[in-house]
Image (cartoon, rainbow, N blue to C red; front, side, top):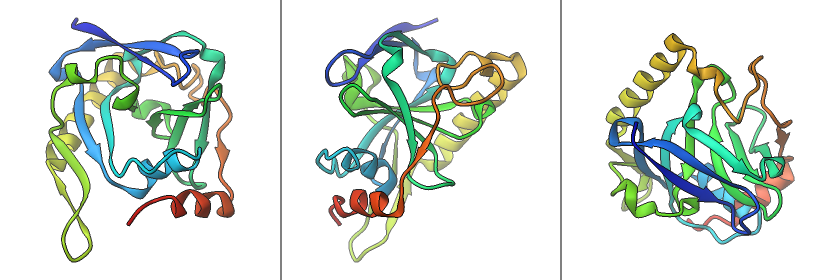
Length: 191
């Protein structure tokens, strides 16, 4: 097992740690997509233009303080679950909608020591001149994610999640943004 790495919301009421911080246990990425960025602008925060994300499995996320502040929303009825701290409206994580998918992305701006995870090895939705976007290292990211998901499903550790209960339901009821809320969040994105 590797070392632990702390995280917290902006006000510090919700805190936790990521266990097993070893290169095999995570993938450090940067995402430029509108969904990751609008998870910030939805709360009135500035468009980050790109979001640093540490991808790992949910069993490695331990909330040690303020778990009662953890809430979740979806940008659309089919969107990923976007977890945040209600105490200060800080975006923290995203997960798939199914517990057995075990994937979690932790916003690296919430890590106590983000430099410990090194430089990103993947860049998603990177804008290119003339419009459009490209992905750098996406194959590696998907392969590592699939390997982690398969391993956690085989050993049953998919059940050890602060985001889903033993029956596979989210631990907080997801709020789906209205079209108006979604449009307002997207208006905050710089093109």
